[in-house]
Amino acid sequence: MKYILFSLFVLLSVFSLFSCQDDDDTTCTESTWYEDADGDGLGNPAVSQLDCDQPTGYVANDSDSDDTGGDATDPTDSGSANSVDPSLFLTDGTDFTVTLVDCTLSDGTTTKCYEIVTNGMPTDHNMGPWCPDNIADGADAGGIWLEGGEVYDVDGAFIENMATFYNDDKWLMYDANGDIYTTETQDDCANAANPDVGVAYENFCVECLPSYLGDLTSTYTIPMTPVLADSPTQFGGGGRGGSNGPSNRGIAFNGVVFDAPAPTDAILGAYTLAPFDDAGGHINLNAGYHYHAATGVSTEIEQSDGHAPMIGYAMDGYGLYAQLDADGNEPTDLDECRGHTDEIRGYHYHADKPGSNNFINCLAGAYAN
Image 1 (cartoon, rainbow, N blue to C red):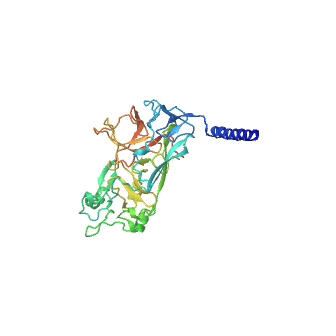
Image 2: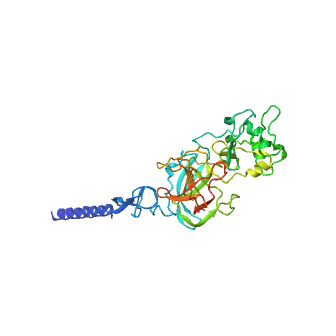
Image 3: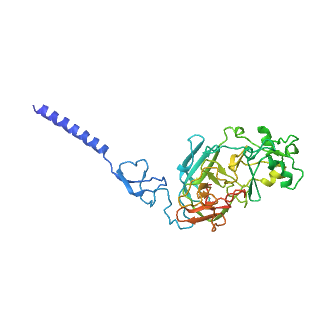
C-alpha cells in the first residue's frame, strides 16, 4: 500500500512539473504597438494594441503626428511637403509596380524610397499619332511640335509649310502627291534618331511605334518623404544646367517619365521632325515612351481649392502640378526650380508651359542615388 501511494505521488509530481514548464513556454511579455498606416516607420499614438509579437502594420514607436501620409513638420515651412502617396499611381502589379525600399539620398540621408518599375506604356490615354500621311490631313492625323514657347499642331499644312516656318527652302517633307516622307520600320526609327543621321533621312518625319519596344522596362526611385537639400541640384544628362544630377524630371501617375528637354535643335539640324503626340510624348528605342510637355492629357488630380491639378511627382519626391490653376493663372512666386509652398501641399513644383519643352528647372530636394 505504501508503495502504491509513493508511486502515485511521484506521477503527480512529474505531471505537475511538466504542466508548469508548458505554462512557462506559452507566457510572454506584451508590448504596446502603434499603428503605422502610412508606412513611414512612425506609429500613431492614438491607435495602439498590446501583443507579444509585432502585428502587421504596427511599430514600436508613437512619434507620428500625422499617420495619413503627411509630413509632421509645419506645412508653412518651405522645406515641408506631403509624403508620396503610392496609391495615386496607376499600377497594375505586372508592367507597372511601386515598392517601398531602403535608399540613400544625394545628401547622405538614409531613408525609405519608392522603387517604380514601369514599361512606360500609359493606360490612361492612347499613344500617337505623330506624323500625318498627307499634306491634306487635319490635326487629328498628327501630333504636336514645340517651338518658341508655343505648341503647334503637326497637321498636313504644318508639314507643307515647313520651309516658310523655318525660313529654309531645304525643307520639303512630301512628294508630288503630297504624301509625307515618314519612317516605316524599326530600323528607320533607329537610323533617323541617330545623332549622326545621314542625308538618306533628311526631310523625314520620324515616327517610332510602341511595337518596336518589346519588353523594355525602366526603374526610377523617389524618396517616400521629400528632404529639402541645402541648395538646388541642376539636372544632368545634357539637360539645362548640365550637372551630375539626374536627367529625368519626374514621374507621371501612369508611370511615364517626365524627361529632359527634347534635343530639338539637333533634330531640326538633321532636317528631320520627330513630333510629340497630343500628350507631349514620343518614343525613343532606348528610353521608351516619355513626355517632353505637360499638355493635360495624362491623369491629373484635381484640387478642391482651385489650385492647379497634380500631374505626378518630381524625382526628389515633391509633388508636381500643372502650370495653371482653375482660373488659368500661373503662380507668381515660383523659385528658380519652379517651386513654391502653400499650407495644403507644402513645397511643390509647377510644370513650365507646354511649348517650352521643359517641366522644372532644378531639384530643391535630395534625390535617390
